[in-house]
Amino acid sequence: MAEQIRAFLETKVMLEEPQLSIVEVAFKCQTFKKNEQILRTGEVCNNFYFIASGGIRVYFITQQGHEKTRHIALDNTIISALSSFISRLPSMELIVAMEDTELYAISHDDFFHLVQSCREWELFYRLILETAYITQTRRVETRVTLSAKQRYDLVMRDNPEFIQRVSNKVLASYLDITQETLSRLKSSHH
Picture 1 (cartoon, rainbow, N blue to C red):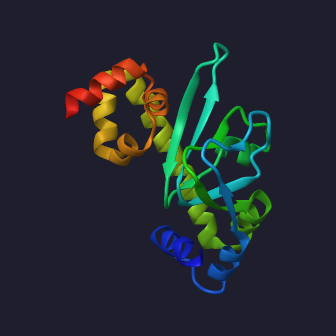
Picture 2 (picture 1 turned 135 degrees about the horizontal axis):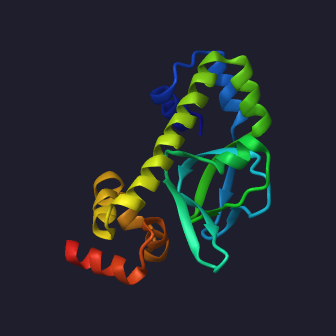
Picture 3 (picture 1 turned 180 degrees about the vertical axis):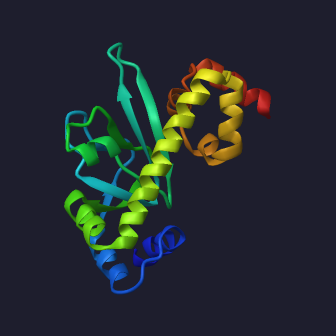
């Protein structure tokens, strides 16, 4: 485990010993089966996750009962229901494993203890927030300004592994299009 998180963190933050060891110890391994819920609606998100292998999605369900996927994360990335994790308020979102998934979780308390005690972790936290903000803003912008085909092309360019590994149902809800439209876009790309 240690190597994978170390390698990931080294690309993001200049952590040295002994901080690196402290960070490593704080991450606990958890495994989830495909379709297993990691966070339910109404629970407070108490963990920040590093995905060692597998894939998870963050989504919410509209009053009409439609799933809206906010975020998809595959191996070697980080994920949380960030607003609940930070605010300590019940999450509107669910986090579910899309595949059999191995995660490393750091608790809210450990995470923010590191933010307080370790300058590099504080910078890492800032990077997480900046990235999340930019990602969210871009998602809203593309929904409003791009056609379904342009949104699909963007995923093909930036996250081609989504096309291979994510079900049509989930991918359509991520792109905010119908499954029929997605099937049509996929077949026109071959």
